[in-house]
Amino acid sequence: MTTTMRTFATRKHGNESVVHDPLTGLTHHAGLTLDSGRVRLPGTDVASWTEIHPAAVQTDVPISVCWSPLVRCNLTCPYCLDDKSILELGRAERYRIANLLAESTVLGVDISGGEPLLLRDLPELVDVLVAGGCAVSVTTNGTHLARRAEALATRVDAVRVSLDGPDAEHHDRWRGAGSFDHAIAGIRAAITQGIPTQIQAVLLRSTALAGIRAMVDLAATLGVSGVTFLQMLPIGEGTALAGTEQLTDDEALALLAELSTTAAVPVRLRTREAAGGFTVIRADGQIWRNQPSAHAISSLRALSTASDLALTTRDGSA
Image (cartoon, rainbow, N blue to C red; front, side, top):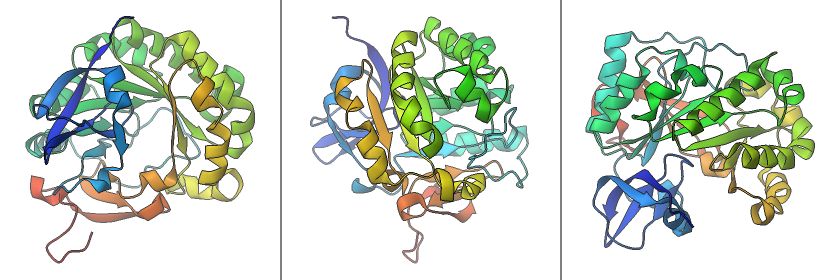
């Protein structure tokens, strides 16, 4: 069996190391000491190491963050988490944010949006983060991925493509006509360019029962590295759907229990509980953090220096 080497970011933690996986967004205890920074490791080895919640790691800054440098998007997903009322920073300010993240001890940065592939300078922003030792992923709706995969291939460590269904009939209902075919073309292009690629799907009550097995089968057919199902968060525009479309964590875990042992590709669930405490940097440069169980998100402060990423302020509050 061929061993697939991928790029991860590590940090020493006592006598062991913690490892951030840019493909899955998970944090692992290595059980041994590794060099800090960006390292190449067998993906199967990392997957076998103990998964831990980042909050369990004693650290001054988050293990990973989501950076949404733009609000603009070519699609209108009804459960979007972003606040579309905020103003986007300009090019110079985007580079300032990228450099602050690179200077920090954050291990992983997931560039999201809006739709990050609408940024012409996305490859250069990734370069800044990689030079600082971060493992970098891009979360995209995939519609522009086919034309940009080649430029990202030598830079980004992973791509996560969002799908709302295993076919055009189900996906395009939420994202618009033609969006499924564009996303699939993007996934194929990313895989051809050698970018570790995974599918992400938000669990909705109206689609979960019929679509999760077919989604995993599609992932296996495409040759992606796995599927992550995300619990819908009642944040942003998603608040309007929470009453009808939101599954409890227990319901979601029950739906995926069989898949976790029979799927042809790795399958995981990000529960709302697991999303609690996650740090988001929005397009206006403000730092936000999910409240426990991710039932809401709170604005903390502007990102002016790397120390602003601290998990607690001087008075001890988050």
